[in-house]
Image (cartoon, rainbow, N blue to C red):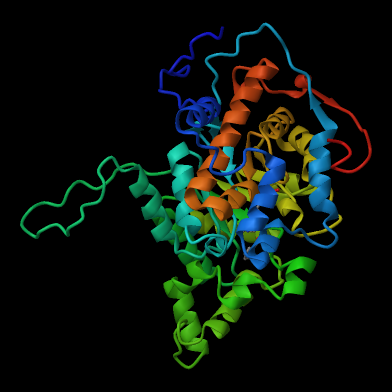
Length: 443
Ligand SMILES: Cc1cc2nc3c(=O)[nH]c(=O)nc-3n(C[C@H](O)[C@H](O)[C@H](O)COP(=O)(O)O)c2cc1C
Ligand SMILES: O=C(O)C(=O)c1ccccc1
């Protein structure tokens, strides 16, 4: 017999019943005979997406760099850590909330910035952002999106609006119905252009669209050697896919017109794509001292550096005065042979965790994975591919199902581990065991 779940958290706020989702799925099966819209098995999700998506799109999402050694190592690194559950302790009401940069979030989960979402399903970024909004999970908008930022933000906010949009345009004499005041949580991920003027324009738009935190991705100033995409001849931004932010940007449009005899972006998408790639993926890394420019352009809001894998760079991040880092190897899509991100997490947390906020991504697939990363000191965790697989299989609803399932799994796993609040997760619940072998044999 379980104790009744308190509807409110410690601060008296109504708490979303994340763990309820699994019982909803059982109830749906009994009452309506309905199976989940997308598999709940993380190991079957990939196959379901493979069957639903075009081969090019699936391989683009699924693939890693090189021989995918780092991508697989990310999973092995999670398998090496095991949880030590505690019994007969209070675990309800569960509180998944975390505080990041002075702001409270309902859960420790964020949607990783993923480019080109319109290539995986027509619901694209609007579909994923709406799914995130319904669960109060921050959506991190990628610089490589297929939909302009302002449209994604409006769709997410509208989905939260208590009043549905009026089917007829408001008459000029009657006041228009109140527009929504609710804003879905969102962050902005920057692929950092060479031009400061262009960067300033993107950041101004991000702030105006309600993005509270700037995530600067450091590990992808050029694309890695990715055999699956090379063999298929498929790199979306080269074909004009995933350039919507740049193509809708007034500064980029002026720059392009000036260098192409007045052509607009629409007149010559191939040349415009080349010009955009030359700005955002030029092959030239910026330098640590350039972060002062970003600070000036972004203002006082939080700045997070994504793609940090060493204690040395984490120390540099502290010195540069940024607010956070994401320990990440880009899901094994950039430097193949790079260390699994989880392997580096504890020592990075030990070195800088008291001075900036350490977040984590790469290889997170289950609730247990999230617990492990949090116990190793991450304050929150980004998830990437699984949500995109959900999107590919069943659009926005599929993405929502994957996120809701992961949140339920986090919630239930915390309870089973004997933990009530995220703040209780620490290394005392972990044991590192090296079984050797590959991902499949160490299942
Ligand atoms: C298809 C795809 C596109 C991505 N696009 C971006 C991007 O535009 N910006 C970015 O910072 N990271 C991007 N990433 C990396 C993710 O933000 C994240 O680091 C990674 O997916 C985490 O690993 P996981 O997929 O194993 O969860 C992309 C990843 C994938 C799979
Ligand atoms: O594929 C990626 O990992 C990525 O970050 C990206 C970069 C540019 C366009 C689309 C995705």
